[in-house]
Image (cartoon, rainbow, N blue to C red):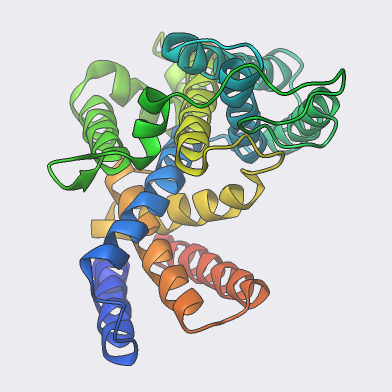
Length: 319
């Protein structure tokens, strides 16, 4: 059981890749693995944000709606308002930080349960984006209600984030790996990162030792919102549109990746490397199931079962 707990995720990745490679001729190819890495780059960014909220013993259900809000904000800045790259990046990131700040206010100041507070924020954000867009996507040359077409378009520098490559590697994958390394080093080797873990492990003890617990909890939710917004930017640049509720499906994938990561190398706690491996496992599995024409609703059953297994294994070993 301890061996499965420490190395089960890695073993599962190897088994799944081997199974689909023998079953599908087009699975083990550079083009397919490039697509897998592009897709998990977005999931991993969202899952890193969830990981930060889990580290401080919280939980953020609003990340999926924040992803959608960021895609709409980026697309709106470019297509409807003819802004340049800086604004298209700054506005969604600012909105993500504000969503995290709102979550922190509800949870810390008003003392609402994190699940209920972030669930309420999720509904609010969904309502805001639907009200702003009236339920329509934002895309190049879209017709405007007052007549004519949208004056702007998705500029090449923005599309490069999700579609471009450097040295034959998708830029979004390089961005994901850079942020994974930075987050891992920050949480593992800096004093501030260790204080995040101390805050989540025992809030009362951390408070008694002089750690500003509420401040670190606020930082965690703001970081969660920022990573979700960054995932929305990558998603918008990849598909070239701002789609309403585009990030809804990413919530479950991100949560599953973060919880599967608990067991990687026996960490027993939220960690960024484990989250990355959890994203890889989910990405490879869903890609193979899609190529085998498994219906998307059946894939949700499998993702739910995997999440139950990861939680049960973690609970058994801890007990």
